[in-house]
Length: 395
Image 1 (tube, one colour):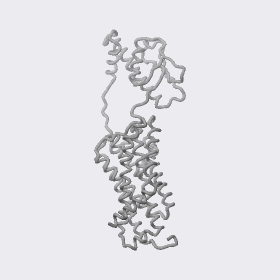
Image 2: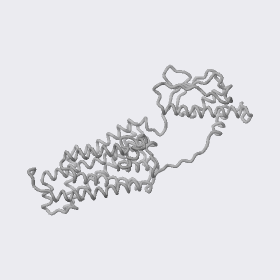
Image 3: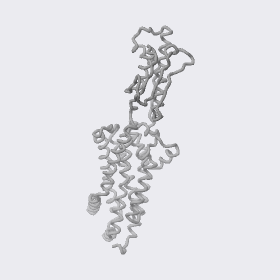
Image 4: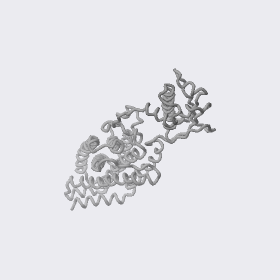
């Protein structure tokens, strides 16, 4: 009964603290929506369509083959004959058809506006290289008599494409590979800001403990003979439930809320038990960190500064604010020290790598070990803090 009353007290304190509820639920939800929208054009499953100009001074059968082969490489893109706008341009030579079999061969001329990004430039170079190779191969096959020039253009192009294709086996490195570079905006933003929001649970935990000490409530609990285990459990369980609720609500926002804003929905492949294990491991890690902060901080202001600072630092080095795929190697190694990085890697293994419960087990083990170490340290400091509590002029 005493434990239930203590837990009810913690829940009432949290429900009445609108600022804490906003930090735990409203802030990560807003971050999730804003960052998913802001990164939707950068992190995509498919590259965006392009507009470019293909200049053909002397139209021919070979230039038509090149155009179709280039269009096949740039799916959804628009190839214009001319434009007054500043667009990338691909110019064929006047003798393009006559020089296809020359060796060395002089390829098309590429020109880019100054504002063209490097990714687009590299994409166009690769597309032109493949399209030109297919066009030259077809010209060689026709010159050798292997292909009848009177065959429909579409069939000849398909033959050239088949001759230049090969099958490559791909395997994801689920346990140690960095999947953040392959995630879309939803797959990266939803787990990142979900994790960031869950770690903020340590702020109301620490603030509540400081309030109890300053108001004399903690001393009254000692006078009532309440055990230390009851006090600790009464603080951990309500916030553990809050973290699990955060986990479920923010995932639901990614699944159902993002499509309403025109953003790609978050899909949740894999076993539900894998997500449950991850939610429990992450919640225990955040709550044990909150217990340690509550025992270390000496005032509400100190708890706010320490908690906020720790959270932001862990997020900055853990791939939450900046994807690890764009970090230099030294920063990636530093990221391995952040529990947020472990949780994010586990999420990406499930969402991007199509991983299983066994694949995320190493990350969950790290989080549970982190929780055990900080929980043990927090329990010892909490016990000492409670035993040292006495009447002061604050009461």
